[in-house]
Image (cartoon, rainbow, N blue to C red):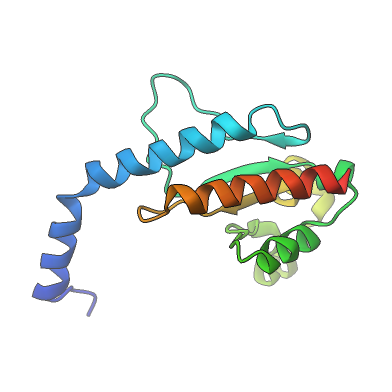
Length: 149
């Protein structure tokens, strides 16, 4: 039985009524990230065409960790030490054991997907993210990139 309860439906409806407010706030946060990260060497901000409305469910950028001479895990651990969450959200299907084994998939068969996976990192973007917290995230990421060169 996958039906939702009346309480879940009411909660979902109340959240839908706020979606424009949530989206506007996330876009403001993303705009600040983009402004501060756009000229950082070895970091690529998310690309968005002008006519596209983005909800920024996630803020994922690409970092060339190889050029920075640091692994993604080390970078994430350093952020964690600063109390900054980061995450890798989508592990490619071809790396999942079931598909890898069943279809004999090799990393070399998916070079573009693998490159994206190796460089993608998501950082905090949520409605209650305060300006002070966002400034800390920006400052620490830039500092960590500059130290890693």
